[in-house]
Length: 261
Ligand code: BGC
View 1 (cartoon, rainbow, N blue to C red):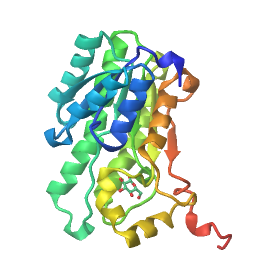
View 2 (view 1 turned 30 degrees about the vertical axis):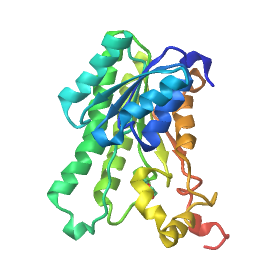
View 3 (view 1 turned 45 degrees about the vertical axis):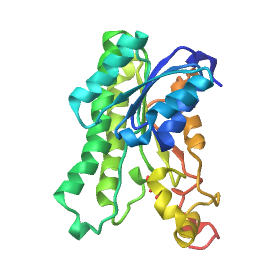
View 4 (view 1 turned 180 degrees about the horizontal axis):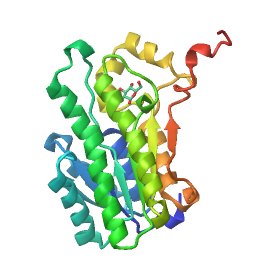
């Protein structure tokens, strides 16, 4: 627990399920006021609010598409109108689909880039603008991926979006450092979330992924949420422009684990 997070106001995008949901619950447990953005009504964001409230936390929900400028502006307005400020913005919403690149349609390319990269840009921009206007030394956190580092055939649009998020974050960290606004990424590896549910329900595919993870197991959303709490807290007050990798070692060339090469 990080006592300095008490009463901080945080927006998390794509937070009705998976990693976003775990981050929302973690910040609520840290006594933050949490604004939960969701996209699909069937993700049942009301249930998450109920769970948070049952634990004594405070949360609001807002539907919206992170790739739409007006929607992102509404998220920030809701935080301001409801809780009077904004301290932490977590760009978590992300999508992916598998397709051989020679068949990758412009539509799929744009859909993934729009949500993962443009959505993160809009969130960073609106959060930074608000923090600058209100003199808040806030924290912006992007949930990127190990694929901001690892190339990924059949997911070239996804890897391109995450590679973009890496340099976006680094550029903004440099730009806003004089204002005391910190910007960082978290790069999760293979995590047990709905985005991966189908893949991990196949034991062979699951085993194949586990072989790529030196720690030997698929991560839990809470293990990513703890990185978000740390990065937002004063314990990370000197940390900006960096990616905190939460991947069980996946980015460390697991093929070399046995000492061959
Ligand atoms: C993707 C997962 C994938 C993991 C490791 C993540 O960014 O969302 O589908 O299993 O990277 O490749």
